[in-house]
Image (cartoon, rainbow, N blue to C red; front, side):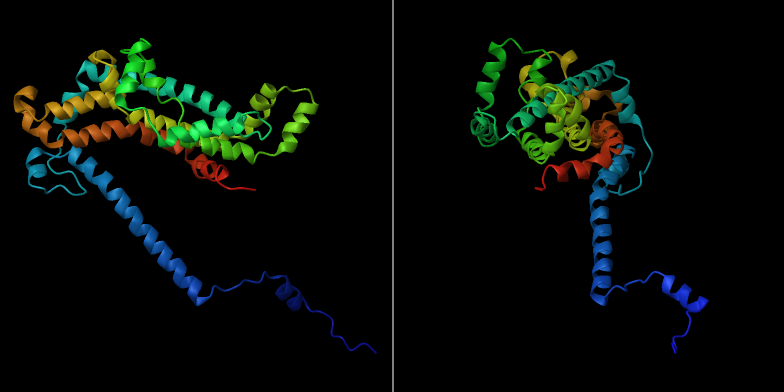
Length: 306
């Protein structure tokens, strides 16, 4: 006779409850230490930014005394008013938007097509083209040869002097090449069987599935072109063609002369650097949240071998 006790309702409920694994003491200590370390790193990273913003809105007397820390003291907008009331500032800001947009678009077209081509192992001369890209990471022609080349091509005082010399970043190129090498070949073969050409596969299959790495590269290129001022300093001699970074650089240089800025020169001298940094980084900070979700995955997809 079977003496097995029938399973009660209580037993059924107990057996249906999910089992949880308790963290070991060592893992708990690690999690606490990791959280504390990350909080400290975040604070150390944010402190300079908050301090710069506080100085940008503070009065000159508190800045010179070194009393501005995380909160503005003697709230003041003199330097912002002096900068933003200048029509040349807005003209140069418009130039920067145009330069960054055009340069990023050209760079993305050249980088994606070049990276996709050299990612194919059956490409003739693949090793040579990869070597050319790596060579540019180590060696540079120098300022004088670059200047003579741009001048001989008639690109001085034009948009192309800013856009073309740095159109392809070898670092970004290698990241995209690694990503395309890990792209599933079965998808491309299936698209080819369906009648798509190489360009069709690239435009209709590869690019739509590469949004993460493309968004990351757009961010890299946009930040680079937005912040650069030296090409304009080197290749342009007309103020109306300068980017905003060049305008702010000249403003900081002019702030060393008290006669150049009128009655409010003391205030402007005190926080012109902070104001320049705030105005320069503000657009990039506004852009970053829209593509932040692609940032980490985009870099990792181009760095991990499958």
